[in-house]
Amino acid sequence: MQIEADIRQLQFGPNDYWFLLTLSSAIILLLTGLTIPAFTNDRLAQDLQSFSIIGGALNLGRQGSPVFMLIILLFSAVFPITKLAAMLFMWLTKLTESMASQGMHWLEILGKWSMLDVFVVTITIGAAHLELLNKTIPESGIYIFGLAIILSMLASVFLRRQLKVEVILEVKHISVPARMLGISIGLLTLLVFFLGITLPLFQVEKWVFWDKQYSVITALPRMMAQGEYLLPLVIALFVILLPLLRFVALSITRLQQRPSRRLIKFSFGLEKWAMWEVYVFALIIVVIKLADFAQLELKLGFWLIAAVAPLSMLDGWLFKRRLRITYKDD
Image 1: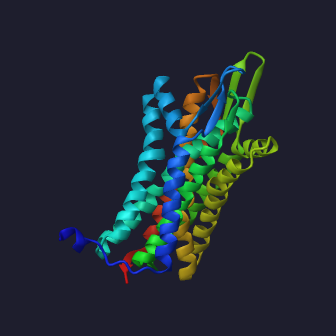
Image 2: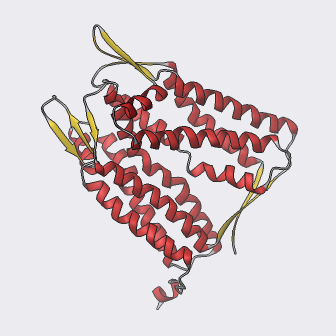
Image 3: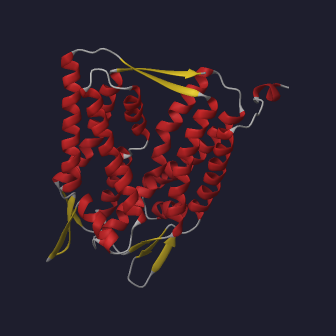
C-alpha cells in the first residue's frame, strides 16, 4: 500500500526515545496548559475571574477585541499544535533530504512564536505589580504552557538529530567595508538594546495626582520582590540574556577573519532561542490594551525596544550573508 511505502522503517535509537519523550510530554502539557486557569484578574477588587489561555482569548473577543483574540489563538494554540503534529509526521514519514531540511528550518523559525502568550501574561503581570493595571495573578496554566513550548523546542533538536539533518556553516570571504558594516550594525543594535531595556517604556497617568513610569529593568526586580520568580526569569533569559549573548557572539565572530566552526554554529544556533521580536510583539499588544484603562504616553524606551526587532533582523541577515549555509542529510 502507498501509506506503508511512505512510513519509514522504525529503528529506535537514543534520539528517537528522547524525541518521543519530549514530544509526548509537550502534547500533554500543552493541552493541559491551554485549558486550565492561566491567570486570575481582580477587576473590581471583589470580582476575581480566572481564565485559561483559551478562555482569556475568547474573553478578548467578547470584550470587542476579535483581532487580539485571533492573534492569541493563532500563536498559543494553532501554531504549537500544528508544530507538534508536523514533527510527529516528519518522524514517521520517509522524507527526502530537501523536505527534511526545509521542514526543520521552518519549524525552528516558527516554534519560538508560540511563547507569545507567555510574554503577554508576564508583561501584564508586571504592569499589575507596578499598579498600572488591576491585580493579575499567574496560575499554574501559564507555567505548564511555557514548559510545553520549551519541551517542543527540545523535541525539534532531537528530531533534527534523528533525521540527521546537519547544518553546514562555512565562512565566505567578504570585503573589509562589508565586514565593518556588519560590525557597525551589530554595535548599533547592542546599544539600542541596552538603552531600550533601561529607559522607561511608557508613562501611565490614571488620576490627576498619580503617574508611574515602566521599564524592563525596573519591572523584573519589582516582580521578584513581590514573590513572582519564574516568569521574570523567563523574560530575563529569553529576552535579555540570550539576545545579549547573541549580539556578543555575532560581534566576536565578525571580528575574526577565520572564526572557528564551533563559534559560528553557536552564534547561528542562538537565533532560535533569542525571542526579542516575540517580546516586542507581546509588548505592543499589552500597550494597546493598557491604553483602554489609563492615559498612556509612550517614552523613548518603547521606541528603542521596537527598533531593536528590525535592527536585530538586519544584523542576523548581514551575519548570514557571510556564511555559506547548506543543509545536508547524511
